[in-house]
Length: 490
Image 1 (cartoon, rainbow, N blue to C red):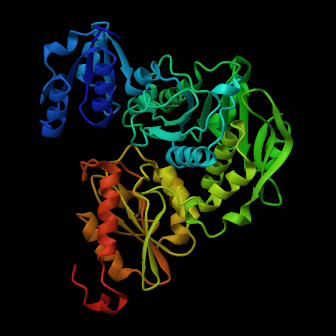
Image 2 (image 1 turned 180 degrees about the vertical axis):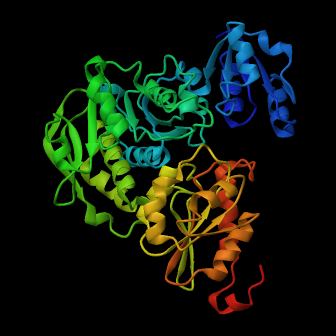
Image 3 (image 1 turned 90 degrees about the vertical axis):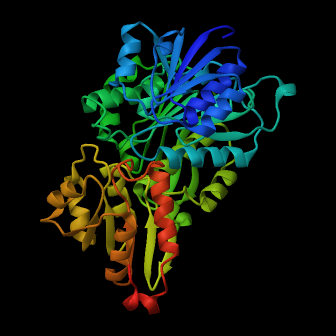
């Protein structure tokens, strides 16, 4: 990398991290960001001796050996087209960072469940503090760490130098990041689901799905691919593509009969037990023909792992943990005490018998569907934001059963009104505080007020779904007690 000229497009979190790593490796780095000047970013880049520009992409961006692009920059943007026409190599921060990575990699992608699965895997592995099962040299064995990185908010570039061969990096990867991955090779790949998503950015669903499949394109016979067998897209893909794969397939299912013919699999038994069949560690050692991890009843009452979608996430995390030979008791303990992730079915507060749940990370119709299924009882729903080509008919049945009122907001509020006007009552709010206040006054106990927008947030929040979720929580925490509801002035 010494002396290579590299353009980094985008000066937000991943762009800054990529720039730091490249500079450290001896590259001549230039950072270009089309958005207005970020004084903090400029100061950091200048302190590192990195030239930068804001508010434009000048011709200097073309003076490079390759380009690292932020996942927020669309493939069809003029700057990407210009780079491609000039024959410039364009890679993601994940791809570039992997060139310098010595640690074992677990890659997690999917339309839903990525963050929960990534977090759960990293917590189980880190909690276990195991010796390195990959090394035959006893002297090299040491207690290691596991970190959740990537699209989860911790750029891989920040970890590659601080982590060694005995550490594990659990990398959440979006389709946008995978689009520009060419040599990235996880030892274990996990695909949670593939459903219609981001159709505002991709020409077709097939194009989107193919981006996800790039996670296993470089895997070899030493590697493992874990996937959700009940996801129709994945099931059909691997039914026809299995012979072309070098990696070992490990399907998971909530229905034992569906994977009865699979040599290796994870499933939920009729007795409600999480069971792994013929799980092997990376030395090829058979751990056990069939082993019970825990009974589903042990997770009863945990909203962080409630709903079938979370049982799949847990099963996939368990499969990864056993591939690293993690003790079953340690897996069971971490599952029981897992608190979930911020902005995903996150309990905020109960006021007068009404619970408020923050599911701001819901940016697709399928994630909304999962939330509606996971919550029992009556649900007052806050829905809307920047639409991504959503088909809301997917949730009609659940809405008819559980949702007496939807508050629509954001750019998509007109679409939501039209989509649900024959299904349930819909009212419009101009802001998130207005939406919360409306439902605070209307909702009847016992019930749930659920923020699960099924849309992107950038029409209303520059800080993404995280800012949207924080604003929701701040509003809810400031609500007066039940005795003041009638006099509450929004």
